[in-house]
Length: 344
Ligand code: NAD
Image (cartoon, rainbow, N blue to C red; front, top):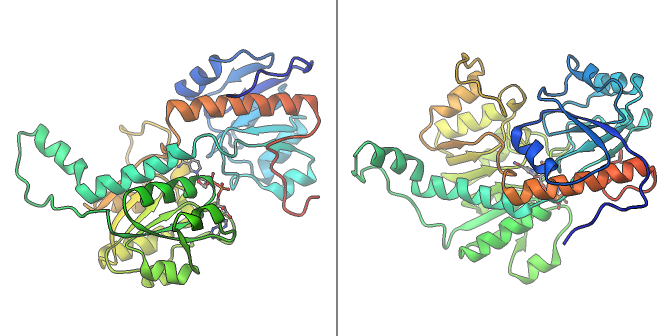
């Protein structure tokens, strides 16, 4: 369905990959490319940025920081091309990147269904307590006490952000027999025709029994879910976040779980995930008090930013990133460019 790398491309880039896991390398190894890749395991931060010395481009993931200090360091090393192998770009200081003349690409939509289906997995695990049932049966405990769930069919689901992932999630919820409410700065006519109702956020919060977040993290959406917005929600609301951790003010949601305002919380992303996720810390002492508190609730389910992690999505990320690198090497127009908002 996709492309063959254009044969007209003559330039070869040396690309330093950061935060590489075995599954990233495998997905890129499946494709031929004229670019030269080095796969570094460490996350990109100020202490590891020097690894990019001598490369033409870096390829980074969601928790690789591209703040002003790191961009300056990369710029001093003459590394001016950045291929993000993710959709979100809240980790990039775009103003600074523009000032330093960086060229940045992302993978805008690799498999919206992968993320939307993971949001459903979180929702259905919480609604039927399958995480508890799994452990019970393995212990030869077939008691059903405490496993009463609730139907998703017939519930009102509120979807915040109806871009590629939110749209896929709306379709899933419609298929489950839900009434679907949505909120976005741009309304999707096709979704409206399917029966999705767009409302101002206050109305969506007040009417939804299930709320799923699919908008990007921006200065406007930072702590979108806070003490005030939580107070507007129905008692016992199910809150799902597969988008970015800082959409939810963790302290406020912990209070709302204690008061039972939030009946279930399913998160694949966490506000302070940078120091935790994508690593095996099982032999370490957990110092993050907030995630530790979240883990004590029986009605909270946390996964470690794995919503994107399907074979199909990894394959698409590799293909689109290779296309992006090829365009960066050519120096012309970039299909998936990320720019600072004030740029022409
Ligand atoms: P998208 O750009 O296609 O859609 C985002 C939608 O949010 C757009 O329709 C936009 O208009 C809307 N939006 C922007 N600001 C809003 C606001 N203030 N209120 C309501 N809606 C607003 O992005 P996408 O591909 O659907 O991805 C959504 C987010 O999912 C990404 O930004 C990323 O943070 C996250 N994501 C997470 C994973 C994961 O593995 N957990 C994987 C991919 C993407």
